[in-house]
Length: 221
Image (cartoon, rainbow, N blue to C red; front, side, top):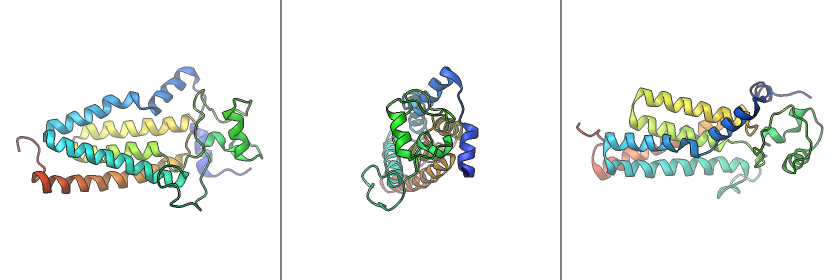
């Protein structure tokens, strides 16, 4: 069975790193681990611009996150916009893609095997507890973290923070491959969605700030 470059790249990056790495990747893919990162963003924005601009920034950030997730849901037929492109064929997550296992069976069958905990081939490493959802294109995780880093990086304007944001993006995106939830292309498409929504909300934030608070300047300028 001929695999695409995207599928071959996924298989090259997905492997069994043992229980410790499984737990680490699960944490990286979750929310709780990143709470300090979000708090750091808010503190940096407050320190540079004051509390009124911080409130505007929070509003723009929430809009970026919600919009990114909604757009990604179009392609997975989930969320409030799931019927917007009903003819689009959703792409199964790698963990439910039988061609990766060399199987000639429907994806629904492999989904049932994994969901019910039945014995399944193990060419694709699927950590315990990672089985969830059906479709992976477009990645909401990639879209939301890129939206955050795009918006926050442009507002905070500190090189070290931009590098930190890039590192966080890489860590989260790779965790999705390790957990067999996304192909690399899913993540690239999600990153594109996130960059677009993050940039759009940056423009809105700047326009709203000028209209309500005057020119956006750092404190002391």
